[in-house]
Image 1: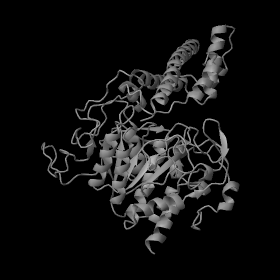
Image 2 (image 1 turned 180 degrees about the vertical axis):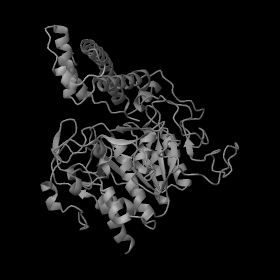
Image 3 (image 1 turned 60 degrees about the vertical axis):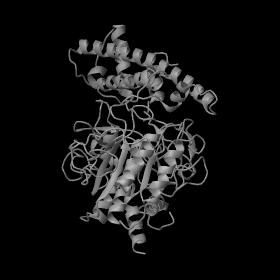
Image 4 (image 1 turned 180 degrees about the horizontal axis):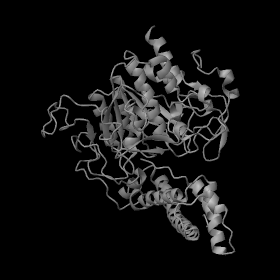
Amino acid sequence: MKLHIKYSLLCLVISTLFVSCGSSSGIISTPIENIDSSPLKISDLTEEELHNWQHLDLANDTIPGMSVDKAYNEIIKNRKGKTVIVAVIDSATDIDHEDLDDVLWVNTDEIPNNGKDDDNNGYVDDIHGWNFIGDTYYEQFEYVRLLASGQTNHPRYTEAQNLYNTEYQKYSQLKTQSTQLLQQVKQANDLIVLHLNKKDYTKDEVSSIKTEDQNLQQAIAIVKSIYAYGYDPVSDFIKAIEGDLVTINDRLDYQLNKNFKGRKINDDINDLSDVGYGNNNPRPVNENESHGTHVSGIILAERNNGKGMKGVANNARLMAIRSTPNGDEYDKDVALAIRYAVDNGAKVINMSFGKAFSPHSDWVRESIVYAAAHDVLIVHGSGNDSDNVDINSNYPNDAKGTEAEIADNFITVGALNPRYGANLVADYSNYGKVNVDVFAPGSDIYSSTPNNNYESKDGTSMAAPNVTGVAALIRSQYPNLTASQVKQILIQSGLPISAKVMVGKSKTIKNLSDISKSGKIVNAYNALIMASQLANQ
């Protein structure tokens, strides 16, 4: 799993605080000629809008969501459809969560907790899914494993070494800078708390302070700068930096540590035939392991229980598969996880993870072909490196570079922000005219996290499950359509965007059609109309 650090924002804040910082279908819901002249959202999104923006409609709400609410109100209504099994191959999932516990896949061929493989599928007591990494939590990045192996003759060894040197220096500097920043902000906060004699102060109270004390003046300047970057109260900023430090330390202590051995499974990682390892518990092994729970909620959180939030799909069942540690996943686990999902009835698979090095990418591609042969759609996030993945590959993928796709069941998704316009594409999102199919909401996505909590997260990890939810809706309402047909519907029925957008680290101005195969953002309303037309042919 790759974590996205808002490094540029952090440096900007640090510098401010004086700390050194080193469609052809004819079914477009919004007519194409009106898109760029439609009213744009000028005011800040309300909390309710932010918690549901991916379900809203560009024309009706001036927010570039997927028109999910419109689809339910005007097309689905009370039609439940056929139950669809969705496999989430990810980090751990809290299957006891209040918004997930009633939408779990149940392996009815297995007798719970009897210690036997009743269905003879190779996995003992796999009631709701499988955990391929057991008690493992921390792991190295794949290129660090390459360096640790000492394979100096490997064709990508020098590339791995250069990347390691860059990343290690970057995160070492970030640790120093973040520690300094945290100390300064805490000191400033303490001075204002002492002066106002209250812990929970407001912007107005800070602005009203009149003082000749230079230390207090600097504290006021620091706190005002934090407000200017959207953090209120200041304690939110402190929590954000403390969270960054956890990530930074994980990066240095584990993911970039050549001497670290994270795997706690006694299998041969280079032998695909060595199977049956792991256990039947996909739940978190660490309190910070929330990614899989968040992804799952986006797809299929209970829609009518009056709790938390609503998933995209209304009649889906969650098959929870834990394969992704805090670090890079192993290709073997991914390949076997795909096959497990296919063999146990999943019709859609979500994979919100990725890496730049993949020593056994052939194993994964063979599993993708296996899924295609069994009519299973796979949805994958494009990655969070601001890269053109036509040039810099992000694994897993369904093609070598820009060569022909190996199968027609794999869809790659880039991430969008909740505001239409030049900043529509998230600055972290990978892109590619050949290898990224569509874009979908990925920033500020509110969803479930462990222990019945909810949080907003950013990433193509969030964009992919939004598309997975729409795919599950289509497969539920129109079960006779194939995985390949569903993929084409998702691509062709999307909302075409003609506005210029900024992409990548250099903020290059592009058309959406320059950075994705379709030039469109996924739209559930349009997709269901096209699915109906195709199903009736």
